[in-house]
Amino acid sequence: MEEHEVYEKIQHKTNHRNKIQKAVTYIFLTLWALIVLFPFYWMILTSVKSYGAYNAEHTPAFFTLSPTIQNYIDAFTTVPLVGYLLNTAIFAVATTVIMVIVSTLAAYAFARLNFRGKNLVFTLFLSLMMIPSELVVITNFVTVTNLDLRNTFVGLVLPSVTSVFYIYLLKENFEQVPDELYRAAKVDGTSDLKYLWKVMIPICRPTIITITILKIIECWNSYVWPRLITDDPAYYLVSNGIQEIRENGFGRENIPAMMAAVVVISVPLIVLFLIFRKKIMAGVSQGGTKG
Amino acid sequence: MNRNHKKAWLYLLPALLFLIFFMVYPLIDVFIYSAEEGFNFASQSYFGVGLYNFSYVLHDPYFLQAVQNTIILVIITVPVSTGLALLISLGLSSIKPLRDLYQTIYFLPYVTNTLAVGLVFMILFQPTEYTDGLVNMVIEFFGGSAVDFIDGPYWAKMFVLCFYTVWIVLPFKILVLTSALASVNPDYYKAARVDGTPKWRVFTKITLPMISPMIFYLVITGFIGAFKAYSDAVALFGTDLNAAGMNTIVGYVYDMLYGDSGGYPSYASAAAIILFAIVLTVTCINLLVSSRKISR
Image 1 (tube, helix red, strand yellow):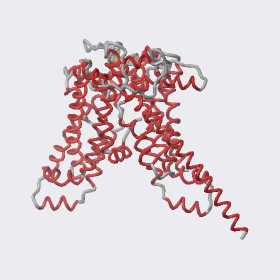
Image 2 (image 1 turned 90 degrees about the vertical axis):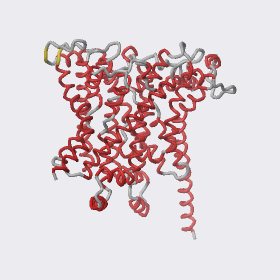
Image 3 (image 1 turned 90 degrees about the horizontal axis):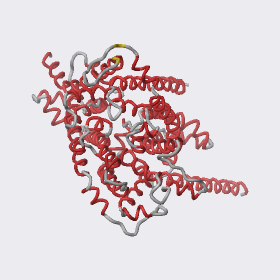
Image 4 (image 1 turned 120 degrees about the vertical axis):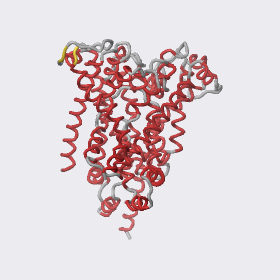
C-alpha cells in the first residue's frame, strides 16, 4: 500500500514538473513570436497614424484612436509607388517564366535523354552552384553597361534567370516518373516535346509550382542587381524604390507615409505566403538559402 | 542515335547559353579584371598586369573597416542564430497545440522584403521629434539610458545590425531544424523512456547526435550567408555605408563598382576574390571540423 503511495507521489511530482516545463516552453515561444510580429504591428500602426500626431508624440503610442488612410493616399500620389510595383511585377513574371522554361528543358535533357558527356556536363552544372553571385556580378555589370542595356528590362531580367539549383531539383523530380511511360509514349510515336508537355509537366506540377513561387519571392526581394543596373527611377523595383523614398521621398521625413509604402510592398508576398504556406516551407527546407 | 544526341543538346542549349554568358565567362573575367592595373572604365584600357589591385584594396582603410564589420557580424550572428533556432525548434517539437500557428509566424521574416522591413527596424530604434524611439523607451523603463542606435556609437549600430540579421535568418534555420527533429526515429525516445533516461541525457546522447549533420549544415551556410551580408546594412543605415562606418565586404565591392565612389571594376574584382578566398577557407575548416565530429 505504502509503495503505491510513493509511486503516486513521484507520478504527481513529474506531472507537476512537466506542466511547469510546458508553461516555460510556451512563454518562450510566445515571446519570440511577439518579437517576430512586433515590427509588422508597428509598421501597420505607424502607417495609420497621421503625420502630425506621429511627430507630436512624447511617448510612442501603442495604438491609435484616430486611424487615417491619408498616408496611403500620399504613398500612391506623391511617390511613383504604382510604377515600382508594376516594374517589380513585370520583372518577377518575366524572370520566372523564362527561368521555368529554360530549367524544364535542361532538366528534361538530363533526366530523360541520353547523350555523350551527360554526366560530365551535369557535374559541371552542379559545380556552378558553388559560385557566389558577388564574383560574377562585376563582369555582368560591365557587360550590360557595354551592351547599352542599363535601365531596360532586358538588362534586368537576363542575368537573373540562371539558377542551377532549380534545374537540379526538377531533374530529380523528372527522374521519378517511371520509364515505362516514356517507352509507351515512344511506341505511340509521341514526340519528346509533346511527352514533356503532356506527361512530365502535369506529373511534376507540384515541384514546378514550388520553384515558381520561390523564384517570385527572390525576384520581389532582389536589391543588388536592380540597384546596379537602374539609375532611372522609371525602372526602379520596390527595393530600390523604398530606398529612394527613404532618401528623398516625401520631401520631408514623413515616416507614417514611408510605413504605408512599406505595408503596400510587404502585403503581396505575405498574402502569397499565406496561400501557399505548405508549399513554400517545404520548398525552402529542401534548398532555400537565405542567411 | 546521333539525332537523339543533337536533340538533347538542343534542350540544353538555352540553359547552357545563359550559364556560359552570365556565369562561366564572368567568373574567368573577374580574375582578369583583378590583375589589370589602372583599368580605366571609360577608355577600357589598362597599363599593366600584376597584384597592385589586391595591395590597394588591402591597404584601403574602408576595406579594412568592412572586413572588421563583417567578421564581427559573422562571429556574433552565426552562433546566436543557430543556438536560438535550436532552442525554438526544440520548444516547437515538444508542443502540440498552436504549433502550426507558431511555425507560420516564425517563417514570416523569410517572405519579407529586407529593405522594406529594415526601415521598420530603423524607426523602432531611431529617435523621433520628441521621443528617443520605442526601443530607448523600453531601455529607459528598465533604468538604462538612451542610446542613438542609428547614428550613434559603433557598438550600438553593430547591435542593431546583428539583431536584424538574426531576425532575418532565423526562419530558415528554424524550418531546417524542426524538420530534422521530426525525422529522428521515435523508437530511440521510447527506448530511452523505458530505461528511465533523464531528459538532459536524452538530448545530448540521442537528439544532438541525430541532428548534428543538420546543425553543421546550418553553421556552414550561416557562415557563407553572414560573410555576404549587405542589404540588411543598407536597409538600416542607408546606401552610404562608408560614412556610417557600417560597410561590409560585399558593400565595399559594390561601392567600388558603382555609385559615387564607383567606376573601379578592378578594385571591386580584387575585393570580391579576397572575400571568396575567406569564405572558401572558412567553409573548408568547417567541413574538416564537422567531418571529424560526425565520424567520431
